[in-house]
Image (spheres, rainbow, N blue to C red):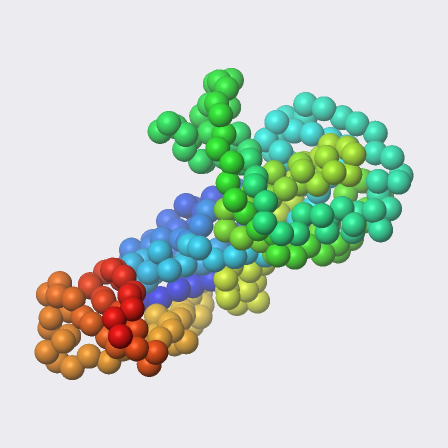
Length: 280
């Protein structure tokens, strides 16, 4: 069994838990293309068998999320699981629809972001959350991200919660984004709920909800039924045709030179592309 399966990860389980379950069901090598926090739910592409070799082509995709932001309360982890460290009254003007929409619009575009201290990013060989748990201070490196679209979905004035949809680049921390939005609104806040609805071209509608199945046999059948094979996934990519001599050369580590229509040559070697250069 080789291919990609889209899982709708439930809350309160890790991405590793899903990988372990699929590995046990399929008896194949299994991996994923990007971790979802235990609190988060939604699209988790799982690579099975030979598809695990294609992970580098899948990890840089943009993503879409549906987010609930709780205003007036701040936690140490910037999410629902953290310890409350501050509370603040939320003025009724803050919850005005126009005010919120205008604020969200300010975040569209390229920007720098500081990831939360409770994250798995490594600094000097240690994960940031390891520093946080020991109460140690560390300089967190900034990263470049981009927000392509922000859409307000709902406002709960009673609970001071706003719900919005965000389309963003790889590497965007939604917890940090929530904190920054709250600051722009003139208050504090944390990420109450997170649902990933799209990764690249993989959508929530394609996903399998593993909690819907009564036993592992039914789930395995559903996985086999919905497995995206590699030929289908790469169907829209450019292709090159090799004769038997070039196939043998390629498989033995030799370089293959291919001329494109624009007169540019590409040089390929097994496992990676070396370079593209003008050689007219």
